[in-house]
Length: 203
Image 1 (cartoon, rainbow, N blue to C red):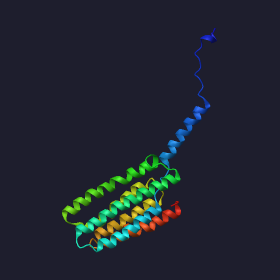
Image 2 (cartoon, rainbow, N blue to C red; image 1 turned 45 degrees about the vertical axis):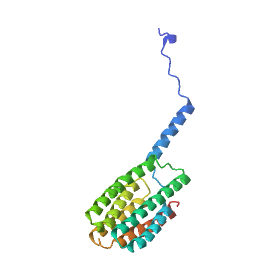
Image 3 (cartoon, helix red, strand yellow; image 1 turned 90 degrees about the horizontal axis):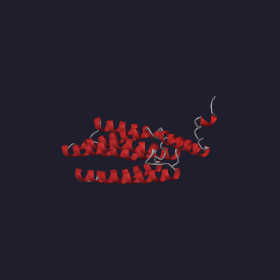
Image 4 (cartoon, rainbow, N blue to C red; image 1 turned 180 degrees about the vertical axis):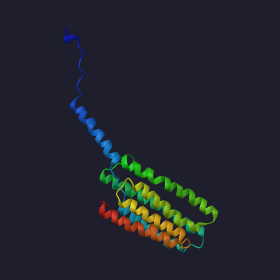
């Protein structure tokens, strides 16, 4: 006859509150991993486009290629600063993390083509074929935006594709029109798509 007093004790039930907290943590991790990163800054893109227009005007009047390059390098640093501040502000308003979940994937996907652009800039400049720089910059910047845009709203990769198309055109069809390519891409496309993003996705 079975002695009930000698039976294995049943495991202690998990507290309902602890189970609910754990479930909420799991749901939050899942949502952060799969959600789109919506803090891409529309008005920040417009600001980057406006500074690019000013840089294009200044660069076109430089007497040497060295000074032309310097203008665009300074513009690149300024554009990165504008973009970083705008992303931070928009993410903070929306309560979105930048260095985790979709934000982290966005940043990590953006970096490899951008770093390749830095290396190619040095190599192209040392080879003395600086007429290729606008096309390379546009193409690799567009690639960065496309890859990062995989984790963002649909208009972001579309923006990147337009930059890539313009970069291919600049490389193959008009390598001598470097200022026109730069003003069209980094000026015009930034302003156009930045405005669209700002109106559709909250700034």
